[in-house]
Image (tube, rainbow over all chains, first blue to last red; front, side):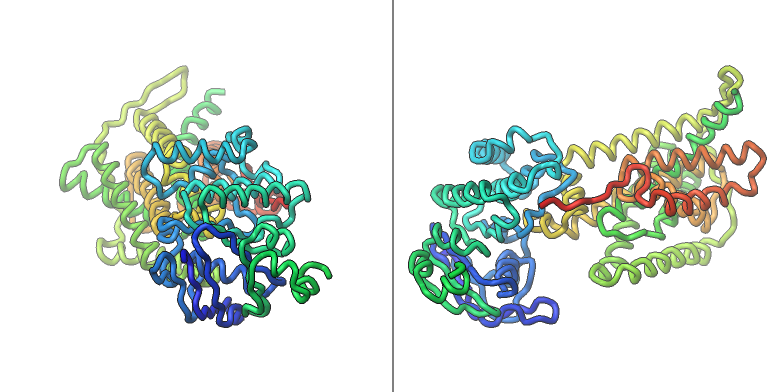
Length: 235
Length: 292
């Protein structure tokens, strides 16, 4: 098990956003957290990546409790988050954005290798390498945000709403890329409102509502589940 | 024609001092959205440091300048650590008021400890005037301009080409995302204060050489003018601060030369009002847009 979340309670401001959540991720899996807006998905992700501190509960990564650690340390340990809304560095070039992703890597050879891997996966980023990242389209920015996270060589990548606000053609591409990334050995935790798409590429999924896990199961089981269909898959 | 050239030369020397100061304002604003009103006082500390090391330890120009930059940097980092960091997540007005408080502390603290007398800054470099086609240029003016330009180029290289420079830019556009790629936010903010305050320390020594006199309150007016320069250039923009500094310097000397010396400060503040009314983003300011 690469990640284990135990009885996690997180307050977001004054709101008790996560009310005792349990789930786990095995190495090499794609796991989805699905649920409506306000179900606490993003809060969970931010807590895992170290941006938020939990009120109580544990997050165990590779056998160690990490819930009190800060984001930079976790990046070094192999957890990279692709935040909701992309959060690329505008004003910095595409190249510089990717360089920032490898901020903690000292080995120049390794950085070079990561660049060629990212450019191979996202050829468009190579074409736009010198451009200001803010001039990219939404889909390209999403690729840049994912490329930036991959530059850190993550073992576990956390994806927050990667398909949000994208044109349908980009959505399919992004999900294909997620499968690819996973095939190359990176474990994926995916948060999506597009539950159908997310579950169809996931090994397992957890359905969240109002800060709690309501259901869990394999991707295919959840897709077939009547309740899930009714609530999240549009009937 | 000669007068115009003469005023441009004078304006550029004074403007390069404002530019060095404005850079500190703009960088600190860029990264933590704080107008650091104590910035002018770091320039005063730099000038006093220069005064003492030249008089007491007989430093030459270069070592006085470099050591004043170190003193500036260290003071900037200390001020950020003790005064601003605890207020990082408080409303912006709290930090702003604290900045004014730090400014008063430095001004009155220095007056108390070292007396508020005006002192003659030691002239380590003998002034020589050159007459080029009727325009007088002193070696000090050239020195100020050249030093300021070298420092600004160095700063630009640090910001554009180094890893820390990229980290500074990343933190200023998106602190959360910066943290998620592994950047230590606190360290980057300290680094930004160090850079900006080092430039202020250097400006303090340069102004000592230029005007020959220093006192504990010397940072107030230039500090505010440099702030105006930063706003004119577009607060948060590094090239904007340099251009704004030179423009304010030239504007001020121009008004002096047409016999309106008494109004030279008023003119600068008037510029601030006009910019805020007409183009609040400044010359190089950008309007951020979110892309979907």
